[in-house]
Length: 115
Image 1 (cartoon, rainbow, N blue to C red):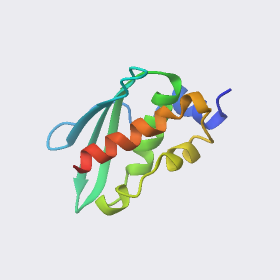
Image 2: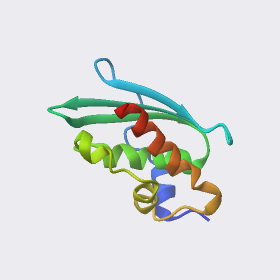
Image 3: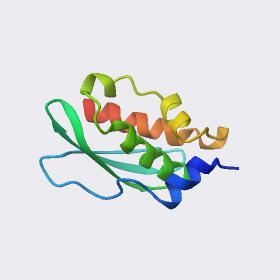
Image 4: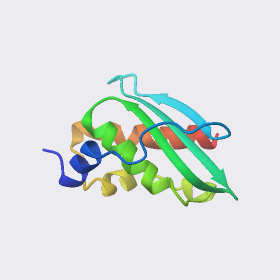
């Protein structure tokens, strides 16, 4: 059973969509389940001014992507480097063991973006 916070992010995703250039864009996927995340971020003065996502996948992955973009906004590159799956899980009110891959997908996206 998913938490109410997770279901709220799934039903009412925040920051869904794309950002135009010069925003950064990365694509990551989980080959085991097939979920895919396209993550966009626009930086101003080394901080995320805007973040957007497009996700194809399960309920948890869509919700996690929404929570991720909320968390990212306003963060510096150094702060982004501190992201762990536990941060996303906490933002969603927890994840079931079968859904923990959703938080890992988010971390993978941020790591790839930071290069």
